[in-house]
Length: 285
Image (cartoon, rainbow, N blue to C red; front, side):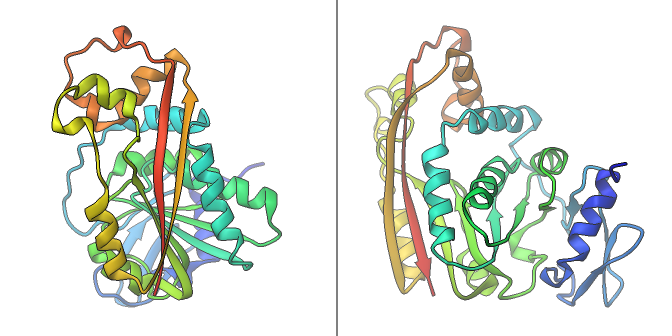
């Protein structure tokens, strides 16, 4: 008989409790038999029935709701981002070791879960996946949908992790905290940041922002800031135009800020293909 998700997640976290640091006082933590994570100074965080833990120490609001994460999961699991997943998996395999990977701004966890599945199919090394996001609805979905991973609601400004805990830190189409990334990275580890390139979702951009400055996009400033923070930087571009099922179009619009404030009727949007155009930035300290 399968264990309740809360208990199974607690057991999984207990085997890896050395990763955790109290976001209140910074001390070491342990996972108790009653499914809480408690530090030496008795600050306590309960593991929820969906299998995640909320490490937030202050109130936070997010513009991302349950519907967005449901749409995001369907779009990602359709394979639209498969070339990116393969490229990230290949980078992790090149480390030729067991990996502990933190996905910052992980949302509902679909990217990290896809990368883990591909890695485990192709490598004899182990993969521990940890996801953190400030958006509780995303982490609830991640805990509900993906087993044998660690899902945390939290803010990297008050990180719930010990220093030098991760071989790789993923930052996929999400804001970065480079100071914290460098604190959390193991020696010889790498930060992998994914940013849009000029052709990313260009079909939607042309539709919504035709003849405006937003129709074109440049990631130059983001790339320069990344280079300022790491001594060794590699950049790999992933660009592919992919056929898209019509039923995915309104979901893609729902998960993309471009579509949030448009007056267009979703059902009237007719796209047959979409361009995924991304830069993968790899940094080492």
